[in-house]
Amino acid sequence: MGQLSSVYRRLEEGAKRLTPQRELIIKLFLERPGQHLSAEEVHQLVKQEFRDIGLATVYRTLELLTKLDILHQIHFNDGRARYEINRETADVHRHHHLVCLRCGRVEEFQEDLLEALEARLLRERGFRVMDHELKFFGVCHQCEGKSANT
Image (tube, rainbow, N blue to C red; front, side, top):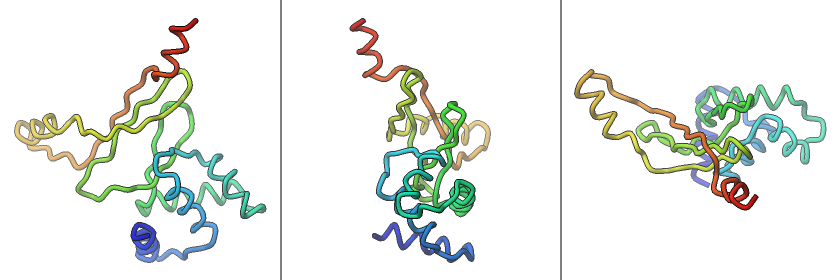
């Protein structure tokens, strides 16, 4: 649970209390490391324990956790912001995403494909890349298999 204590420390540094609702939302993301949850999905999961929690409270909590760099907000061009736990340190790039345009499935891709480009940008332009986000949009293998069978 070292990651949980790191998250608690970030909350304390941001002068924010660890409410039971915030703790539950953080644990939801820690227990689902590969998932990219929308506010509505988080709300449905949190309501199982806190029946009276409102969607506005979930939105405020997600915004706070994103501001404190505990969560990372991502957009997959489906009209909804999604969130994932920020597992990275400041010196490591985020992973990339493969987004299926048919079913909406999102897969993570860990290999950093842009290291040579980043080195070139530094060498030729004096621009040091701190981070980047790369998304590939296409058709996943499951959807591709379905269309081949019809």
